[in-house]
Length: 219
Image 1 (cartoon, rainbow, N blue to C red):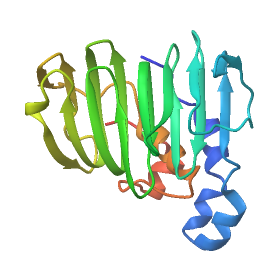
Image 2 (tube, rainbow, N blue to C red):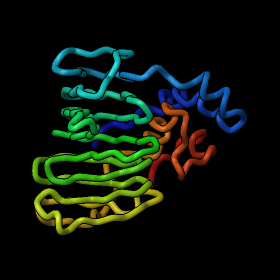
Image 3 (cartoon, rainbow, N blue to C red):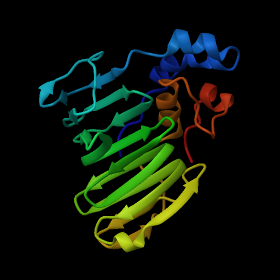
Image 4 (cartoon, helix red, strand yellow):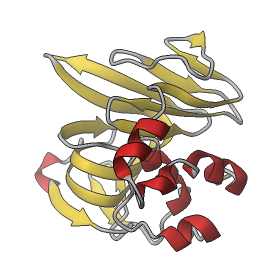
């Protein structure tokens, strides 16, 4: 299991976002960071070249991480946390954007509007959603942390599912043609979702100010 972002780092990133409660307009102008790489740990590459914090991330790019590495980045109204040994393609096809997790693990939150996110094993049609994905070849893990999704297994499109959740309610493993309810929520935390949404001056639907201050990110 990957090590979560530290409490110190989380509170530093949230320092401005807590002003949302009192004055959302001022907080937005004060806190919203410049789009691109917000955090680089270890080896992070964009299109195969070493990347640094503050570097832009654009549609058409491929972002990858090495061993013991991690990347946090924003793109338009979305925010992503890419775990170690992971590769994501931020693609453009027929003037439409798509996100493909080629390998590894990724937590992401999305602003308004439809998006398509996929692995080798599954395609998700999402809108204003938070989700966690793991890509292990023909096997993938999907946790719709909150929001709505149309889930289509690549090997069994007839098993298409449409559902909504509010707080990690229905995680699944997609293994070839099988869609298997997962026994537990793995490898991501509420604190990380709060952090990603804060980068876009938003709060997840389960947000509680007490949780942010005290740091209870478990399930």
